[in-house]
Image 1 (cartoon, rainbow, N blue to C red):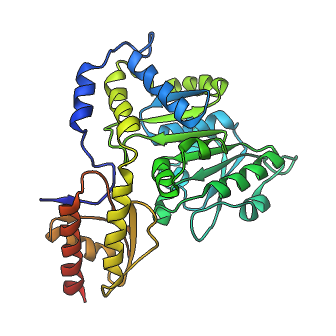
Image 2: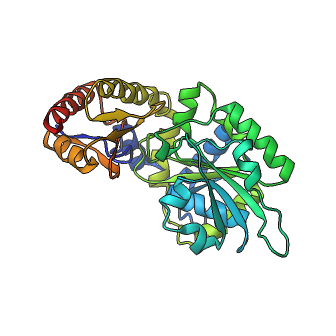
Image 3: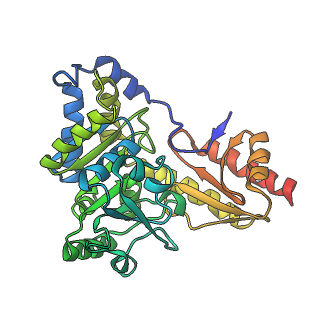
Length: 340
């Protein structure tokens, strides 16, 4: 048995998803309408409390469409320094939107009024205006850290004060909500637009959703077409997304518990130090090179991914059950013995 902890994107469709794909009503979503995709978009809009939603092939596309729709070339946009939108999206802010991406360093991935307000620029003949604040919840490179509802509310008050909208990269927003024991709309109401990913912890093979006001989504659909994201019988994919949103959210708590159990074990192992692990992403600092840990774990049938020269990442998902957790724990013990 291989235990794959490289990412929560490695999951395969559930049996319910495969049945939904085989039986989904379909249409050409470019020429006219695809009924299953429209159903998914309605569900997402209702869950987030937004007027409309748009199905897109990936979270990267959803985020970059949002950025392009909110801004114009030459504007500045604010991000947490390690944000996915600037770190892992191929330079999209510069290439697609032509915006100045300004990073704000934090210790935990959480943007606050105290660290955001000094970075807001007001347009003049000399400076680009800040036209968007981008938030990531949970934050990937900060170990699945969570921005609370209260923190979102504080940032929202600041954005209204300065008339700067907020976009939320909510690729793992449902993980945040499970950890916080809150509804998605309790966070979504504090941002103007948000993206949610179906193919991470929620198990769909493909797809994300961009949610926001109807006029915004209408413009976003134009950007989707421009970027090549207009697809035909998307209901085959959207059918999986419906299963994700209606049946795969509550079980995320299991992933959190397993990640935290492995973190607890690693606290007692030599040569490795886990970072705080509030959700399903476990990041570990290593004394030996992370690639050495990756190799030793791979020998035991456990896949991880280096997250820096001496940093390792392990991500839990529905494909890792209690037996998989036990194998992972045993593998870390053996790797620690081999490397220390």
